[in-house]
Each structure stands twice: as structure tokens, then as C-alpha cells.
Image (cartoon, rainbow, N blue to C red; front, top):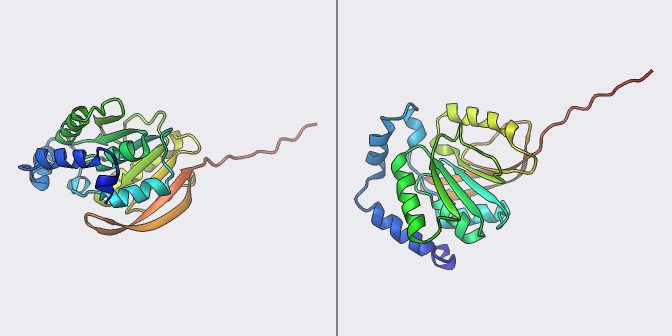
Length: 208
């Protein structure tokens, strides 16, 4: 199992189990969601299993030279997996404060604070400078944030890899490089792999 093949990953899972032992995800989300002006559909709970996550990272060719970011990172499983399996810098962006607090606590306990970071922020507004791999689990979002997030493609440089689980992305600057159907905590889901390549308009100038 991936849990024991990837160094320290079992420790991450153990700490998650301990920290969330008496926290019901649905109730936890409900308590915090009332403080945030976003539709309830944006806060449905779901996890990416480690086996699935590893397949995604391998297909996206994530390496130690990448900066991986999970937009809507939840309990942080994909972030920890990317850091530990690919030895890259990994960041999670999450609106619900408790998830970020507990994830950063796990990172500190395992001395991963220089490699892993969880930020309490809106992924529609967060800083994407230097990011080379973006992961989004769109199944748990309403349509509004999904459409607004696509507007941010224009600010990304060519070569950034965009991974979308549960929702095909339609943007002229996102080139499809692959797709797969993988198992998530809520069932099988399609996953699309894109690369940013901006369309350039060429104009023909005439000279006298």
C-alpha cells in the first residue's frame, strides 16, 4: 500500500486520525461555513485516496522541482502526498480555518514546515506566483467558483500543469494532455490533465 511505501505518510495518516477522531466532517464544515459567504455546495466533504493521488502525481509527472498547489485542500492529503512522494514544495489553499490549523500542526509535528504549507485563503484570490502544478477536485464545488477560477488561467505562464478531478475544463489556453477514471472517496471520477499554453495572435504587418 502507498501508505507504507511513501516515507512518513503513515505518520501523517495516524495524526489525521487522532486529530479528527472526535470531529465529524459534515458538522465541522457546517459550523464554519456559516461564517463564509459562499454556497453550501462549495463545502461538500471528500478525500482523494493515497493510491489515486499517487497515480495522479505520476501521470502529471510531478518532480522535486515543482511547486504543487491544491486549491480547496480540505484535510490536506494530496498536499502531504505530493511533498512526501515527489519531494516537492506543496501548498494547500482552504477556506475552512480548522483544516489549515490541523494540517499545519501535522506538518510541524513531522518537521515538514519547510516543505509543506497550508493557507487559509480563497483560491479565487490566492497568490499563484511560481506554481507549476495545480490540483482541483471540482466535484465538491458549485458552478460559480469553477467558472471564476478558469479566469485565472490567463495569469499563469505557459507550461503550468492543471489537474481537474470531476469537471472537464474548457478554456482556450488549457491544452488536454491526458485523462483517466480513478477512485475517490465518493466513487469513480474522471480526471483531466492539462497544460497551459497561451494562444498567440499573429498579425501580419505590411510595409511600404
